Length: 276
Image 1: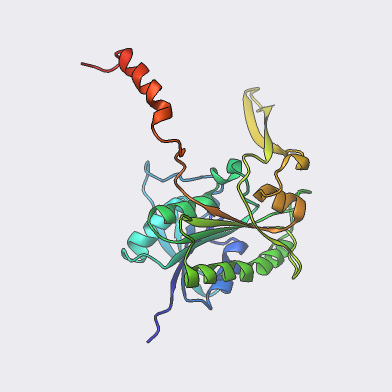
Image 2 (image 1 turned 120 degrees about the vertical axis):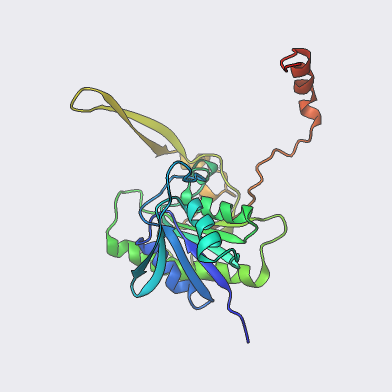
């Protein structure tokens, strides 16, 4: 008897997010899909874990489908899913998304809860892919528009997951970071991209509350498009309107070896900074 692949699905936009369920319906033909996601939005939480208070895990029904809502972050979801929901049995793959908003450039990736779920999976030795959808730069979108775009992206994301299940990730790749443009068609290009350093100039706005105390909003202004390198994820999404697939590793160690830092070691030893 053929054993169906077990797919763990999560996100950082919350258990009710349309992107999560568009991806669920696209994936369910590939195998058994288990949904474990934050109970509410946990965007920009990165790799954070909930260590300072208890975590809650509860079953919910969404559109007739049983899922699990977690009171913590996407990383919490992965750990609880594997150790409690799946009782220690690793899934065949973890899919994260589809996120509301693109996750391109290291500036975004290191803060992304969506990508963090894939990183957490990779650390645990599980193949993974993170999926994100670019939203219009003009501002907020309606629920109907968002669902339609997620439904377009879902089957493409499922094809990526199917490919990983069939072929495995290439040697040296721990997960894929996939970004969709806001509009998809049969002619949309697909690019294998490198990750750009930054896409925004960070801006801090100071305002005053009714008691005249300062508070702050952080946001970003998109850098000039001509500054983006043509092989980058940022160029692919913002200039070409293409699907960007970035092969990723969680090992961020600089490949320089020890010799360039020997001088630092000798300096520390010569200053006698260590207790005797």
